Image (cartoon, rainbow, N blue to C red; front, side, top):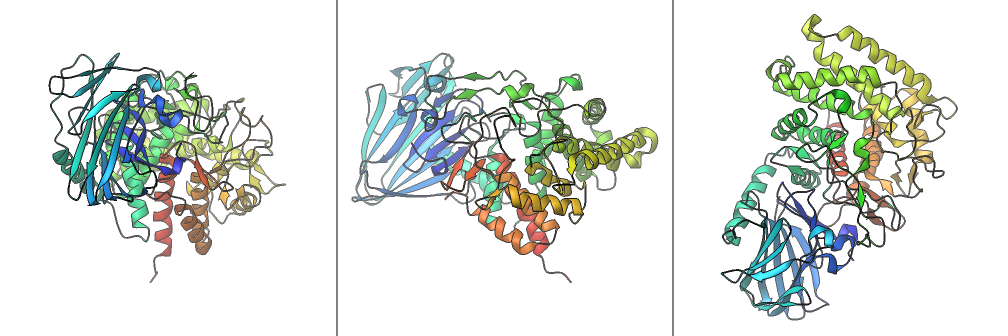
Length: 599
């Protein structure tokens, strides 16, 4: 099984695939991000579904790169017989989800094999395979049918489809796999070359809008492309990651399904995109939000399906062995039923930002889009009634709810942004009431969330546990970065949470802190937050050194997982992770601005 960092992402803004360095697509959910997987070897074995195209020479050396600023991957294999290139991509804007793989000879003659193993229902169901009227292969099970076409001679063996072929200089073989309803007619063949050009034009056109006046342009652009690939374009929903159950600790149980739209993660993703000038995605997500949270605000969830689905019941898949034995493998997410106070602050903050963009002189979106106004006011009214309640917090603890400092901090953000955004409208809104609530929450956090003995804000009121999420206090404007309480918090983080040069989410002294056995890697977003506070404190040399160490963790195609194990020097958690790439973009822009020559 490949290491997490050995995978590259293919995306078409509705689904995603992970392809390893050795040419094996080990994860693909069709037709949507949150559909069941037809290739699930990532969480099991090749018998659970994969598609590998590679030279027969097991000693062949592979190098790979995206084709410019796109989600099209080119892998170059150098074997004893010669050189061959493999181009992989999900076709953008195809009538049906389509995966294309094109093998092309460069030098010498290379013997190649394609091994296609289709298993529906996350590796459980073996489809019926038959020949179509034009010699295409049809793999059918339940609601789906996959259509496989290639000019290479293909045979079925041991419930696999094998294609053996040789490539000389300039010779090429194209493979296509299309997904349709099992009752639908067979779709027409995909023109691989035309699909390649159409997909290339889409991604390069989108990427060209990225602001490029910063030192780490390549890393930022790749992160933005990754974030775009995690948006379900049809609805505007933003998923947290395209995978499930990649472990936060190898062999452990911290294995969660991230193929859903967290309000928090989506809000932060859009803030990063807006910073880079991508406003269309923000507007589409705002519309998605209005549809998703329709109903009473107390019924709002912290996450939804890509079209706003509410029922995301969690279950385990016992037939999958788990990534490197990390069980259980889960689909669905029980955290969808949790109360997490902080998400309301993130939602109000992004609505405030999108509104300010539409008209710099007034928050005109309040009048131009009544549903958005109704959502914002309903959220604020709800926060008024619940901000004192304990919750499960940003890290979605599976233990008892607590008065988390970060949660209270984001409740403060909700009212702070409401005051800033609505003050100009006079008595149309209860701005004075919001201002009093904002000040009350601020005073409570400073009194109950700060431990004078430690000299730092702690994880929750009365806790002796430190949590990196409190680093957001100066970033969101709660206190100045040079306030003694922030300076003390930074010192405590440096003393107690930085391990192996990176920042942990929180201390895990025992299994009672979050209701789960201890053990996980450094959380990359937290390390980027640390960079942001260093920037605000003017510690630019330290900030730059940490930032460049962090981007150095990206794999060979610029992707980051959720966490990193400094001891084993490997990535952990779901991959690629929007949270990590969001934090990279935000830190890059903040640091670049601070490093600009003055005067």
